[in-house]
Amino acid sequence: MFNRRGTLATLTGGLLTSLLASAAQARPAQSVKVPMDPTEVLPLWPGDPPGSAGVTAVETLVDRTVAGGLRDRATTHTRKPTLTVFRPPQANGAAVVLMPGGGYERVVSDKEGFETARWLADRGYTCFVLLYRLPGDQWGAGPDAPLQDAQRAVRLVRSKAAAMKFDPARVSIMGFSAGGHLAASLTTRFDAKVYDRVDAADDLSARPDLSALIYPVVSMVDGPVHGGSRKQLLGLTPTPEQIALYSPEQNVTDRVPPVFLLHAADDKTVPVANSLMMFTALKAKAIPAELHVFEEGGHGFGLRGIVDKPVAAWPGLFEAFAKRHGI
Figure 1 (cartoon, helix red, strand yellow):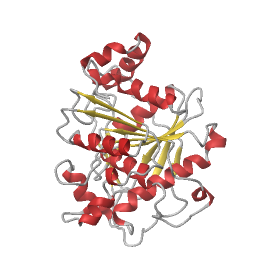
Figure 2 (spheres, helix red, strand yellow; figure 1 turned 60 degrees about the horizontal axis):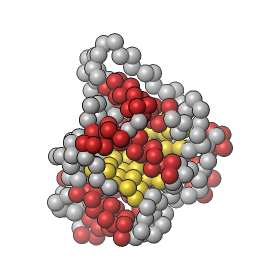
Figure 3 (spheres, rainbow, N blue to C red; figure 1 turned 90 degrees about the vertical axis):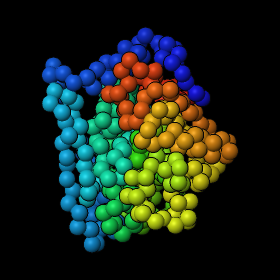
């Protein structure tokens, strides 16, 4: 489904108001109060993550915030993966696991993680922002280390459903940019055996009930590939077999859940072809899917980069798609 400038005009006044209110946080201003970080942070693994032997990278939090602007932090060399919890004022019975981007070199927690989680939590979703490991840090599983974390995240979230008052059959994922590649990989390889059982949470399914891919890196194939993400994931000379395995559009089966896709046609970082190829693969398997391509938006807009642009429609479009599919 392709959207042009007229898309924004279809939003109701109430939704537009809420979107602009959320996005207003993105406008650098000394008067904007930066929300406090959540204090509820769950360790992803009960001990060291799988394949930790020989890993020497030092986890580092880099603060890139511009004075007077919104907080902008990124974590490099993740050693202890976590889920940061955003509980809604009034739960709607559904949960979302968010996977921020960062080119597989870092995890950008604020722009695509915390800000989006707050928007979703205000609408009733119990949210979990995943701080995942990066493939270039010599983990035993190599390029599957982030997928280990993504599978474990969905399983762990499902194990918390009763205590946190959401339905374990209404767990969705949302990934941005390289986090979109991770989400797409989980969407297509949720049942891949990439780590050994750790505890009872691992007896639960890692299959998401719905997937949202936001300006995602998808294909590892020359042309549409985001070179930086492929280099971090597969190195400089990946084999044809690696390219096929780590290109989610080549691994779509009839067990894939419904997928929401969003991209801007003028994205100069991750070509829109990534979303087009994924959508085509989904439709070939008759998977429920919805694709929104906006004329303008660039890359990495999240919520803070949508003010006064047609792409401001995207959060409401996702919410409508999710509700149609029971999430």
